[in-house]
Length: 92
Image (cartoon, rainbow, N blue to C red; front, side):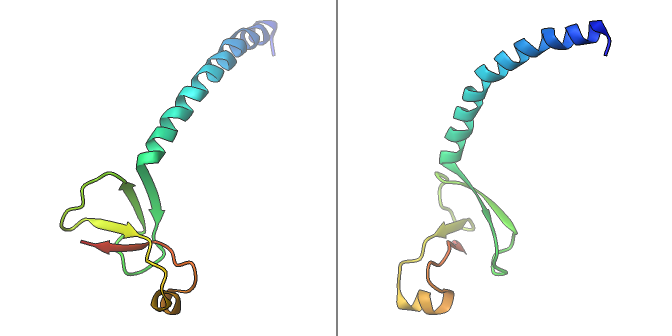
Protein backbone atom coordinates (compact mmCIF):
# COMPACT_ATOMS: atom_id res chain seq x y z
CA UNK A 1 0.00 0.00 0.00
CA UNK A 2 1.09 3.48 -0.62
CA UNK A 3 1.65 5.94 2.17
CA UNK A 4 -1.52 7.81 1.19
CA UNK A 5 -3.68 4.65 1.26
CA UNK A 6 -2.30 3.57 4.63
CA UNK A 7 -2.95 6.99 6.10
CA UNK A 8 -6.47 7.07 4.63
CA UNK A 9 -7.33 3.66 6.10
CA UNK A 10 -6.07 4.74 9.53
CA UNK A 11 -8.04 7.98 9.32
CA UNK A 12 -11.31 6.30 8.32
CA UNK A 13 -10.95 3.30 10.64
CA UNK A 14 -11.35 5.14 13.95
CA UNK A 15 -14.61 7.01 13.13
CA UNK A 16 -16.02 3.83 11.60
CA UNK A 17 -15.32 1.80 14.76
CA UNK A 18 -16.73 4.52 17.03
CA UNK A 19 -19.86 4.84 14.89
CA UNK A 20 -20.34 1.07 14.97
CA UNK A 21 -20.01 1.03 18.76
CA UNK A 22 -22.72 3.68 19.07
CA UNK A 23 -25.10 2.16 16.50
CA UNK A 24 -24.81 -1.47 17.62
CA UNK A 25 -26.85 -1.06 20.85
CA UNK A 26 -29.46 1.01 19.00
CA UNK A 27 -29.83 -1.66 16.32
CA UNK A 28 -29.91 -4.44 18.90
CA UNK A 29 -32.75 -2.71 20.79
CA UNK A 30 -34.83 -2.37 17.63
CA UNK A 31 -34.34 -6.03 16.69
CA UNK A 32 -35.20 -7.12 20.25
CA UNK A 33 -38.42 -5.05 20.26
CA UNK A 34 -39.40 -6.51 16.88
CA UNK A 35 -38.70 -10.08 18.06
CA UNK A 36 -41.04 -9.70 21.05
CA UNK A 37 -44.02 -9.15 18.71
CA UNK A 38 -43.10 -11.47 15.83
CA UNK A 39 -42.04 -15.07 15.22
CA UNK A 40 -40.62 -17.08 12.32
CA UNK A 41 -41.67 -20.73 12.20
CA UNK A 42 -40.40 -23.50 9.91
CA UNK A 43 -43.02 -26.06 8.86
CA UNK A 44 -42.00 -29.73 9.07
CA UNK A 45 -45.48 -31.09 8.38
CA UNK A 46 -47.16 -31.68 5.00
CA UNK A 47 -50.53 -30.64 6.49
CA UNK A 48 -49.87 -26.88 6.21
CA UNK A 49 -49.58 -25.04 2.88
CA UNK A 50 -46.21 -23.25 3.28
CA UNK A 51 -42.72 -24.26 4.35
CA UNK A 52 -42.34 -21.26 6.68
CA UNK A 53 -44.59 -18.81 8.50
CA UNK A 54 -44.01 -15.21 9.61
CA UNK A 55 -46.26 -14.42 12.58
CA UNK A 56 -47.42 -11.22 14.22
CA UNK A 57 -48.18 -12.25 17.82
CA UNK A 58 -50.77 -9.51 18.29
CA UNK A 59 -52.68 -9.90 15.00
CA UNK A 60 -56.44 -10.41 15.21
CA UNK A 61 -57.65 -13.95 14.60
CA UNK A 62 -60.04 -13.92 11.65
CA UNK A 63 -61.61 -16.51 9.43
CA UNK A 64 -59.01 -18.02 7.11
CA UNK A 65 -56.01 -17.06 9.25
CA UNK A 66 -53.56 -19.57 10.65
CA UNK A 67 -53.17 -20.02 14.39
CA UNK A 68 -50.39 -21.84 16.21
CA UNK A 69 -50.74 -23.27 19.71
CA UNK A 70 -49.17 -25.71 22.12
CA UNK A 71 -51.41 -28.75 22.56
CA UNK A 72 -52.39 -29.60 26.15
CA UNK A 73 -50.48 -32.51 27.64
CA UNK A 74 -52.56 -35.66 27.20
CA UNK A 75 -52.10 -39.34 26.50
CA UNK A 76 -53.71 -38.97 23.06
CA UNK A 77 -51.23 -36.30 21.95
CA UNK A 78 -48.34 -38.31 23.37
CA UNK A 79 -49.41 -41.49 21.54
CA UNK A 80 -49.81 -39.78 18.16
CA UNK A 81 -47.05 -37.15 18.26
CA UNK A 82 -44.64 -38.29 20.98
CA UNK A 83 -43.49 -36.59 24.16
CA UNK A 84 -42.88 -32.87 23.95
CA UNK A 85 -45.02 -32.27 20.87
CA UNK A 86 -44.21 -29.14 18.87
CA UNK A 87 -46.60 -26.29 18.07
CA UNK A 88 -49.77 -27.20 16.18
CA UNK A 89 -50.94 -25.02 13.33
CA UNK A 90 -54.54 -24.82 12.14
CA UNK A 91 -56.51 -22.64 9.74
CA UNK A 92 -59.48 -20.91 11.41
